[in-house]
Length: 153
Image 1: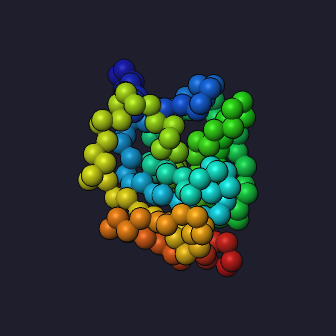
Image 2: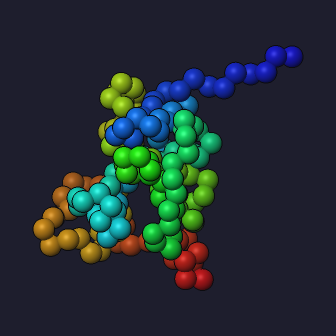
């Protein structure tokens, strides 16, 4: 019996220099706008937007370089251009957040952005120079209970 071919990629993306490309055979399950201090420092902006996928649905041409800056997540980036690419929370190792800015425009129209669950996270301590918009999206003050348990026991 012939092997079933892997599903075709639905969407794709890359780092700024295209050294690392990624594809997904599923659409994102949700998206988060992370306002934590680490995301602000890494991005140089008020937040990083991540699309959430089941980890097995993402394929990288080359694995991103990984670093653990905070106790609750591992981040992936391109070691050539420095682009932020991923974040995997230790409380949810079966999921990966892929930086929304890495999404290629071609194929992005397949994502139902209005129907996707969107939320702001780590909104407790916004910088004084940015006001998180009152856009009606769900908000989480800090880490989830599951994350807190893993980090602090």
